[in-house]
Length: 364
Picture 1 (tube, rainbow, N blue to C red):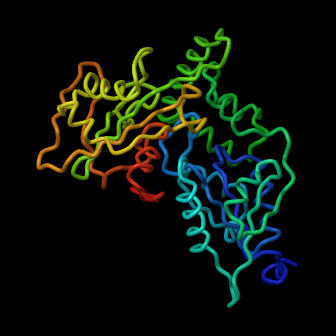
Picture 2: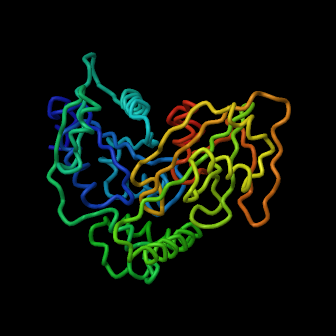
Picture 3: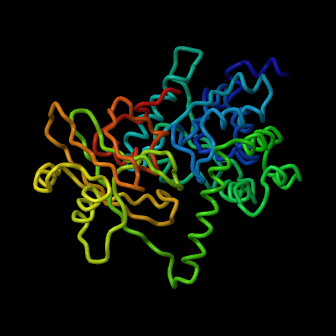
């Protein structure tokens, strides 16, 4: 009886937690959530990569993915579903774990005086031992994997520049997606963000062709500068794809015979025209770190060595001289910093040096 499902003792868990990026939600995700609804009185779905700028890897915003997820369930099931945004913390597991724990704590309703029984649910292949080791206080629940579904392959087909994705969707070729998700992606294909991502896909295909004959997959080395003064950070707005219109940390590729710090200082001098003497910059260096998350860059495997410069407070921010044809640099107040306005993993690089919380600047 449906009535009986409201009795807490009929469920194995008070709450089951499902964490994923859902780019996009597919039938494999739906199967996990349906199993969770059978076994728990409450299901919390934490949607990762929230607040990040659109990219070929993260094309849909949190609110779009939330609507896609809810479209696969009826009103009764949706009443027991809590869907909450979660920002990745690529280089700090402790920040990410704390955010997950606090969200589950705030959203969980035990229904009685005892501590709620909470579990972490996922498909058997995706439920890695490393993931589980971060939450030893929660029980693990594995669900049989739905074979033959890959979110990355679905995205490749949606943004393949040689076809019309809207027409392709209507043929029924995306059988791995719930009908509500297909309808929302079809609508998305009529929007400017979709066309901008198609432009990025064309560039990516050109990039891949250019390196197709290389004996090994290329690994690129870049530098970035995190320059902070008086509550402001130095950023450059990108003038071309990928990431056109987004803010980025100053930086670029290193030259063949260049040391990393020298490359970083050169980028600040030549591309940003930062009016701070080099000895002052070197004296303001407070840290450096390699950022190497495998998916951090659109180009493929790209390592970034970032340097943190903390300039002395002053009533005037250092002048920036515009560079013809280059990215437009400006000082941005830290209070105005928004993760969704930053290119690639640059928010996480800033977060690493400045200790920003996981949901810093978000309005969701």
